[in-house]
Image 1: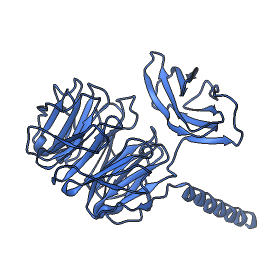
Image 2: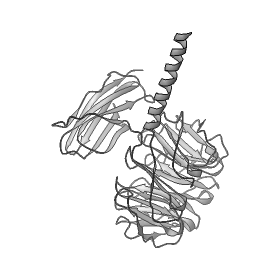
Image 3: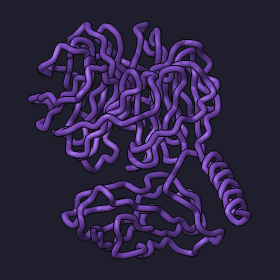
Length: 416
């Protein structure tokens, strides 16, 4: 009995210690002074330092130092603005009430009006490339441009339900979601839109791919804490348990398995296993949070009512420094284990001089990118990245490291 009692005590201590470690590792969110009390509806960063927020009454604010200071930009409109999207550091768009679309080509210094062809509120604007963009909104309205917004033409979505989000993976494959559980998708660049059965009549407010190299897995979030997931391009949607009934307004994935969603009453949830479980974080506010964006894997921003801006600088990442040694040369190591199932580790080295923009990508044997593992600035050092291929088929894959003029590619084998 004494041994059992001792074992139970030790087990309890271990659980407490382990729980403390998990809590210590959770991303923390701190308050950022926005300089406004207007409700903020969208946030977008074009780099780790430069970002924008938009909100009511034509508000646009900009930071060039990672949120430490925000300055007011002249939008040229008093319409409420619900979305901002940039396609280059210089060129961006906003959308809002009464069909408002405005464009900048000089990083927000000036904004010019575009004729959307509708008076409906446009809740979302999304550009695939410099020419091709979509705007979605009230009453099932969907507009498309193929010339950077000079002309916006109507798209027939087949629904009169309001559309709150439109998101494309490629020039052809895109999804739009909205009121009453509406999910519409296209495989031909919006020429035709078809419906998918979401299994809910709850309004869906956002849709996102968790891997911008694969159209198989998508997530939707919406009112009453609804989170939906498909692993077969929308043929079937599964309702996930997010552990909340608060409305969820937006979702953002930093890695295939790591994602964040924000919403009503300041709720922030995150997952590290592609949505199987969701953990609530302390946002430090009860204000509704409408938008979340991560310019890098460890740094993210969320914005909401009453000028609320929250920032995290310790978000979960699969990039870990593994040594204090500063290498002499760039180097990409062979993954281990290899072959692997389903996870493996990839190590790379950045020499003195550091702060290089690093891209580490995985390709299949046809040369198609299947996952982006690193896409950010990193200091000099030795790093290790976890690659989880649970959703990929067995086969030969290649991983490529790009850093300035350095590039190297190695082969690995997934065996299931």
